[in-house]
Length: 187
Image (cartoon, helix red, strand yellow):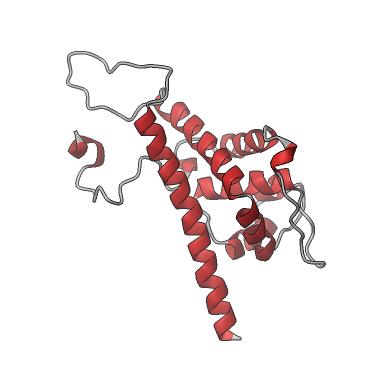
């Protein structure tokens, strides 16, 4: 079964999700989904994050929607996201016109990692459902009977999605750690 699902891929690094979820859904769908999920979060889960004086402030919900969208797209570097906020219309819309800098994005992620994880998990599950029509891992079809569909999320499948979500956040932290360390050494 593993060969049919992943081919010759190294199973230690195999993922179920596309690197950029826009490969599975339209950009507008992904952005609207990130925004909807961010707006469903209870206000009590947000912590205050300050922006530098010169940066245009971004409220918590737009920042959450932006980072959820960016991580779903495979954009992890806070400095890259800062630059993209100027040029990318979707990010401009998600941020409500605010232009967060990389430091703000890193601080926001640090204080809201659990909330971002939760939102990104929901986005990934919904995108999977849109793409595949169910919440199960693809099963090889033996040709005799169509695979069974169910409305329940397979717990092992959900754990795999959670692991992939956590890996995306870890990648963001690692990229930022490398960039900010390199920047400090270069000064």
